[in-house]
Figure 1 (cartoon, rainbow, N blue to C red):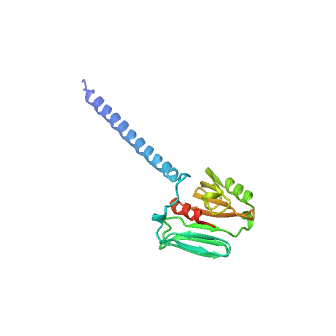
Figure 2 (cartoon, rainbow, N blue to C red):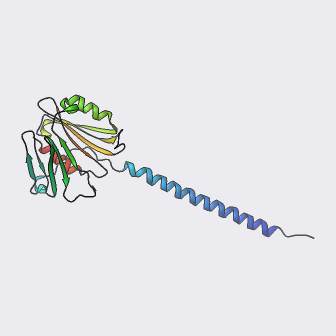
Length: 197
């Protein structure tokens, strides 16, 4: 009795081809998922460039907050609050979900901020993927400073994109302007920084 095994070989060949095809598709899908996951963390990195200041016609009717320690402008549609003497928060009105990061301004000149060099060095040590730019006195109403962008290196906010500006105060301390989060409105941030006196 002779059996015809040629049909079984064809079935086995098709099964191998189908298994190979399914595994290939699975690997491609897995690769895309990994690529999307890792690219999400790197897509938000504002460039530190010249010309980020909003021009006068675009400013509209900005408000001014002035105290005995500091004066700065903030845009319409935003609120500025002094949460503590010398510590201010500027945030978008109705921003309940925090879709856009707020801007913190610390003009208390206490703790690490009592010494400009120490404050800047502490921030450098707490940022990864750091990009820096010096700010000349003409770019701010103060004696100049430094702008830094990176991701927090440690602590509760580890990995969160953060933008710092340290302005040199005439007393030798540092006025800190900071914003952290996935969406930082750098044009508003830079314009507030440029208005600080």
